[in-house]
Structures are given as C-alpha cells and as structure tokens.
Amino acid sequence: MKLVLFDRKQGVEAGLLTDAGVIPFGDLQPPGDDGQSVMRKVIDTFDELRPALERLSEIGEAVPLDQVRLLPPLPRPGKILNCIANYWEHAQRDARPINMFMKNADAVIGPGDTIELPDFDEPWCFMHEAELAVVVKGPAKAVTEENWRDAVFGYTCAIDVTARGEGRITWKKGSWLGKSFDTFAPLGPCIVTADEIPDPNNLWVQFWNNDELRHNYNTDDMEHRVPAIIAFITKVMTMNSGDVILTGTNHEGLGFLQHGERVRMKIHGIGEMELDVVDPLRRTWERGVYMGEDSTNHEAVKRHRPEQSATLLGSSVSS
Image 1 (cartoon, rainbow, N blue to C red):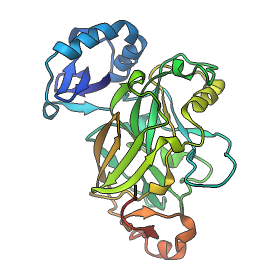
Image 2 (image 1 turned 90 degrees about the vertical axis):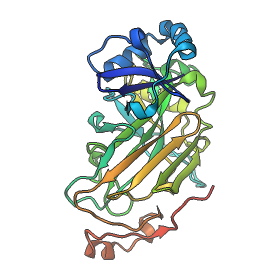
Image 3 (image 1 turned 120 degrees about the vertical axis):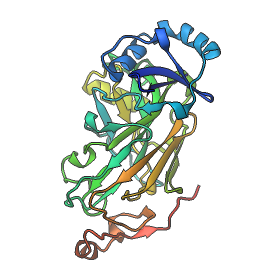
C-alpha cells in the first residue's frame, strides 16, 4: 500500500497512491493539526485502518495527479537520522564502525518542490545523495536485529542534499550544518508499507540530473544493513512513529546541483519524484559524476569562485 499526503486547495489530506491517481481517505482520515500528525496517527492505527483502506483501494474514486499537489509524506519528522557513508563501493577493507548524524527536520520538502541553495558562497559546492529512507513505527527502543521489522512501518525516497567544503568534506568540517539547510531533505513521493518490500537490501536506486543518470545502485551494497541500523539507533535512543532513517548512499554517483536543473529520483518498488534547483548566486560547476578530492585542483577552484569547477567522470553512471 502506498500512502501519501496531498493538497487540492482544501487542506492537507491523506490518500492512497494508485496508477490512476490519489484515492482520498475521506472519513477514514484520522484527525490531526497538520500533515505530520495525520500521518503519524495513520502509522499508529494502521492495523485497525487496513481492512477499510483495502476496501477503499478497490472501490474508491481516484483523483488524477494533475489535479492535486503531492506533499512530503512526513512533512516534519521528529527525528531524521542519517547513516554516514554506509556503502562498500567496491572497497576491499574491513567494515567501518556504524555512525550517524541528525538532519534538520525543517529541511523537508516534497515532490515538485524546489531545492534552494543558500545565498552565500562559503560552501565549496552542493551535491545530491539519493537514499533509501526507513519510516519508523514506534515507540522503538532496544530493538534487536532479529526483531528489526517491529520498528519499521515502511519506506520512502530521500535526497540528502549536502553542502561541501573542498572535495567531499561536509561543510562545516566537524559538524553537520552542511546537511541541514532548509530544503535539503526532499522526501517522497509516498510511504510504501513494509509488507510491500520483502527485502529493503535489494532495491534499485536511481537519480537523474537533467535526464543524466548519476546514482545507479542496489541497496544490497550497504555496509551496515537495515536490521543492524535499526538495532544500533534504538540502542542509543527511542525512535517514534514518523521518524525517518536515511540509510546512506553509494558515493560513486555524486554530482553537483546548480541553478535551473531538474532532478529526478526513483527507487524501484517505491516510486519517484522530481524537484527543481535554484541558486540566487547562479554558481556553476562542471556537469557529471564527481570523482573525489584527490582528483581536484583546489587552487584553481578557489581562483574561479563562483565559477567553480571540479574534475569529473563523464555525465552518467554505467549500470
């Protein structure tokens, strides 16, 4: 089942996403002051709602997508936890210790929204990281790897937009401010319930910038898989319904974001969303996939701000 929040100029509504459009919950929608509280109540009462929602999916009338505006399915999660790195990327090494950071919940935007780069030029550049996001069912505390499914309600797509220092260092070094600018956490287009995804570590993630394929990887390459991530986080803190966990990205697909671009992310089996990028400073970088700081002439980059550039590998990622 694919759950969404949407607006058709009469307030936030919950609905089922189908091939024909969105079927509104109508009277089945739990009360809530905002979209986050509505979706959180859907998560908490889903077992009770499910039979009625299944009937609704069969008999409900769908509203075409061009008549609604899809919203982020979780507009302001209580917590956004992000894995640091977490993909092997063909490396021959011992597994790195699992580590995470928190991202600003006010950074969340949804399908069709706009990623806005900040209007000052201290960050060296801005990049996309397409990731699988786990939607939590809570309260979840001290969940074991064997019981990890108890803490998972479903999954959605996420883009961890990142401001960089030189190379691939997150701006500012030693903090996660570069991950937390407003609009730097697109989520959507829907939440797919966990029963629809037999194995979250077997999903195909893709990301295009102006129709150029960049991220193109399978989540089976995770260094620490979803059960281990759930166990680690809930050992540290209680996770509540509607909290979100971003599981990391394959950095082989990293590229720059800049003014006027249109980006699209898809996780097969979950869905896809498109967003625009604006930059009030109109900075430019070479297009394509970024190879890392070792291949970059930083002195040349510094001299050419804001007309910045970096060493890249082509404009696409092979499958």
